[in-house]
Image (cartoon, rainbow, N blue to C red; front, side, top):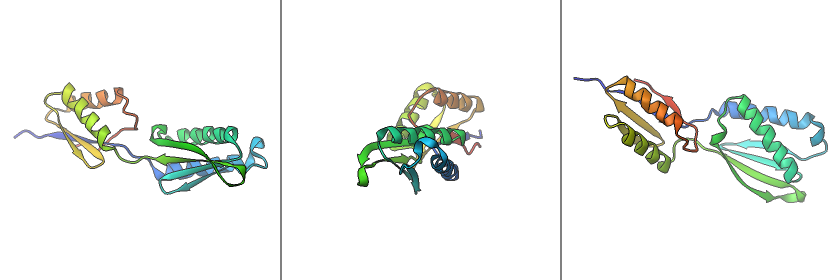
Length: 163
């Protein structure tokens, strides 16, 4: 009886690293000269970040600063979904940034379709917010991983649970 090897395709973001990046961004906003006497801030609540600033130009600077801190902490920027810029109280502007976790159904179907079209002997199973890939040969699994790395699905993909 042949043993099937497998791995899971997931899309995860480390919440602690996001929290650390937000704290670093807050510290830099407090010390930078161009943010002096500004209400600019970054709040982290659950899976959302709320960016507040005086005007759209300063808000763009806050976004750039936050993206820099997240990139240094190796948080994938593809996991961030920026909302529209809204006007808030006191003449300020606000933007909500959602951090996505898991693979949405349409993306999971696209991953499954790509693997099934490219590799005939590889089996794919969608399991909630992850995708499990099976094959009797490790080489086919490695080729499937490379095909997924080469394709851009708009979300960060990680490979876990190798068996």
